[in-house]
Length: 460
Ligand code: SF4
Image (cartoon, rainbow, N blue to C red; front, top):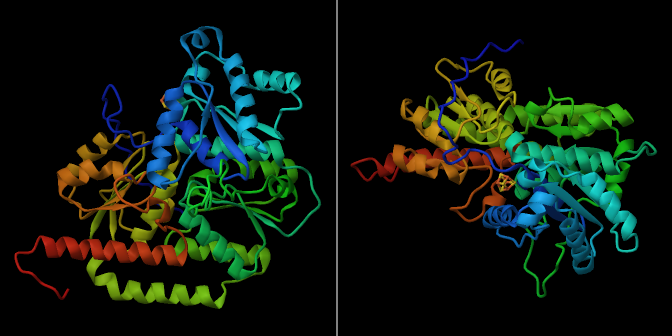
């Protein structure tokens, strides 16, 4: 069915600078990808402050040590180029960490002065072959041209282009989950294992960014996608690429595998909620012959039962969703199937294609009055939110000032979650993720009703 058009995207606020941005910087996304590769150290070519900022953001969300090396430009490097620092930094990382790979992402400064990073890396390898780790991965991540999500997908493409080779056909599926939580990665792995599907998940930071305590410090956290598995991606039966906005983009890692190695690309939305998770399983069964296993069918059944139980509490409520485009689309789809009206959908990304994807997933939902904001900061989102009658906000903890001002409860999802514990364990995907999101949603509404009632009802 052709999706009806959504109302026009609201114009940008016209503010001179971002006020509490609804996006993060591009190399952050690249660092997340590199953190999800086994024995790989993220490295930023540029100012030291960029690495400090990104480490701080990742550590306070994931609550894990996150090592990100930096070439630490000085004033002199800014004028004459940072090749010397980059080479010295790489030598230090090799001698301290002994990694199999180093992922080099650029900061705004290195991009602005036009550093020729591939040339510097080639010259480093030529000068110091014995010290060179197995691989140096380069990705250009100018933050003035994109967000952390763009940086994430650019790094995915760099990794796959560098490692995936023509290989014998095998039965191991490629799964590209997008920027989701470590809990989501575990959930995806559990789902595929339960169905008996062999797969390579890239990136896999389920352990590296949410691991266990150690009796002694490890410079490189255990876990991550093995390089050898990435090398064999060219022989996979298909690549599942999650995130509806990616489907229209020809430059993704899955699109490259399809073009270069003939690996079919299966573009799906993030499996958030019943319909999108059903689509995931339908495609998996079509391609692999492995259907929904009984234990997960039970999870699905319990989810439907709970939706019936809780529908009366949420039907007709109005919500604002903000964050990464694919997360916003997935959550809007889920809210639509619950009978909750998405009244405001916003992202800091520009030209992400989010609006078209919202039209697809909300084809059966009343979208009259829906406001869609792209390229927005949280201040602009709050300004629009004030004009709407909202019952709920769904987004990262950067939306807390808005929630406080509007006195509307915020359900924390996505990234970053800095003002609560467990951001890395927030589940969004699969029937189980939908179940937990739904319970949180209903209970937030009940709690708000209780707190705002003059009577102390304890039976709702
Ligand atoms: S200067 Fe650019 S790369 Fe560095 S922290 Fe700021 S946005 Fe990120």
